[in-house]
Length: 175
Image 1 (cartoon, rainbow, N blue to C red):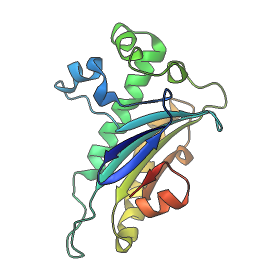
Image 2: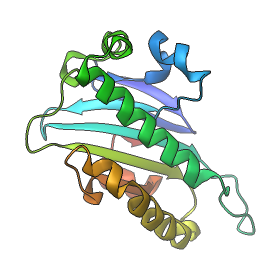
Image 3: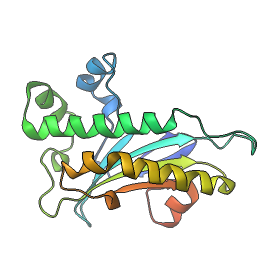
């Protein structure tokens, strides 16, 4: 297992079955051209699931402050661009072949049927933000519905959680 520190949380992922697009030179060569990425990806062999996870830390916001207005658009861009990067790998485009070298073998081909890809947006927030998160979750699912359908996925594959709920549900994070 390998542990990363991101957004004031520890993320422990399987060695050899995890990746970060940000560590990939092929991604970095495109990031200046407006391409975005989700923070972590990993293959969970026990459930045959490819996970993509984005973390954001808003634990220091006061109760009077709201989550940033551009959070929704940022999540949309990161999810869409990450799926496009994976599709480029699975399609074997020239740039996809470069990105493929940065992925573990378990993530280099499209997950076999039934497709199991989970998009997780995780916020390090205090519990009083739960109503804000529920509204944001509905917006995210509605906007990504058509995009994930292109991968034979449904909105059930899109998850938005606060960090405490994520830990209780067994996601690989800790404080």
